[in-house]
Image (cartoon, rainbow, N blue to C red; front, top):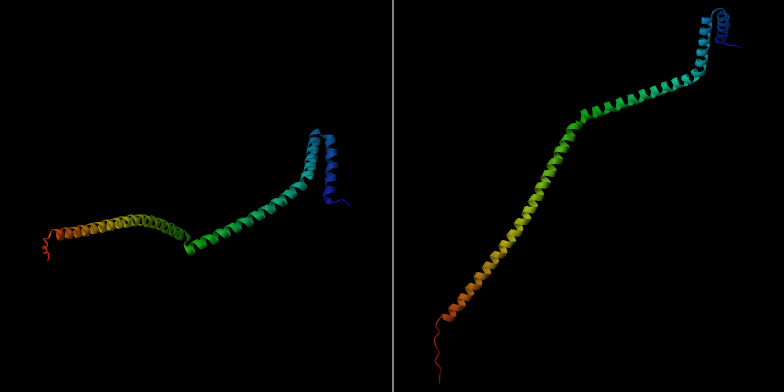
Amino acid sequence: MASSSEVNSLEDKDRGQAEAEKDPSVEAAAVSRLCAAGLLGRLQPDLEGLNKRLERLSARQMDVGDRVAAEEEKFSRAEEQFRLREMVERTRRYGAKAREIKKEMTALRERSGRLTARAVALMEAKQREAMDREQRRIREEEIEEELVAKPIQKKKP
């Protein structure tokens, strides 16, 4: 059994043929309608399939857009709640301070090492001076003792 659209289509064709026999412009219009209908009939299933795919793609795109918006909302709430930017900035400042303190500590350690070496050298020099003074004093005492007149002992017969 033929559908109503097919019946209408056949009736249009019959009318178009009858009119085409009368007028060549009617014939051209009928030919162009037939070509358009044929082209549409040939491409319509593909176009309908593409339309369905586009609708699914649009729905997915909307879903992804909604998800992204929800995630952005979460981030903005978290940022407001925890003041993330402020915390990041504070962390950067503290990191810079820590690097500066580390640099100062390294400089102090090097300076301390130089001062310790200098102190050891000074202590050794002082000890040498003290030993030299003590040795001079001892020599001077020995020389003095030698210079002191000693009574001559008489020999007993």
